[in-house]
Image 1 (cartoon, rainbow, N blue to C red):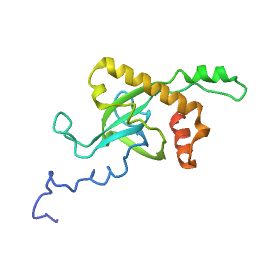
Image 2 (image 1 turned 90 degrees about the vertical axis):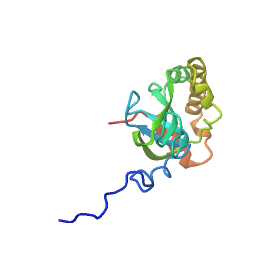
Image 3 (image 1 turned 45 degrees about the vertical axis):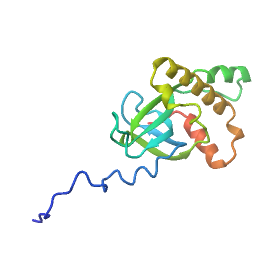
Image 4 (image 1 turned 60 degrees about the horizontal axis):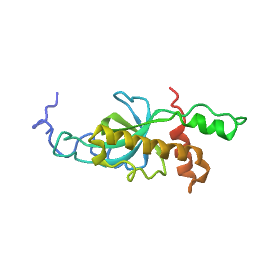
Length: 166
């Protein structure tokens, strides 16, 4: 048997999670693994590498996602019907531990930093306003998916609005 001379230090910077934050950047599509929104897709708004001094002393990120996606649309539907069916989207905003999100390879071209202000998430009334603004952004992006600059970001937004199959 092999016994190391010193047990591994838990406070060292070299943990299993050290390389993970490089992957999770703003605009990245992630899948939430734990909690109320488990199995839902979200977009990273902001990341906090070492956490903050207050209540979250772990690496976490602010995500904005879709709790309830748009309804199914077919080619034969009129424009007004498509708009009506896209209005069923329900967004969510949440701080999540980095270990509870699964990063995908997709990136979305949405500017959510302006829409989601951290100070607004403290009170419940302002959080409702943030969600309303997010719903508008998500609806506009969903209805105008063809107006994306790069093909990589077009596939990312297409993936983001599709229902997760599992």
